[in-house]
Length: 155
Image (cartoon, rainbow, N blue to C red):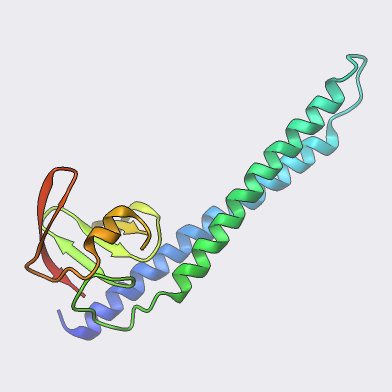
């Protein structure tokens, strides 16, 4: 694989990550809107405090989704700062790390994703596994979950 192909591959992964986060942002915004609408439409009833309880529950739900939305927005901002235009020789933010059984993209914590025909673990640079991989090069090994793994390539 040429360095241009490596950069294009990582740029595609970054774009896929942006799309995933954008979808999560849209879902959180929709959930906030629905929770607000539910809280606003809760009508007074003869059951006394049921109205206030329903409104309070709607506001709690809205607040929960607002926190999720804020976290997704921060994750998107961090992903946008990732430099994929460099072919790295050691694992770091923006690097793609291929092992025999797994592949990792150190950029954003999106978990296991299928991109094209490959399963790739999107790791936040702040996760224990990403910290374990930090500065490792192709040919080096690391131990994670009692499994010794050889790094085949880093770029």
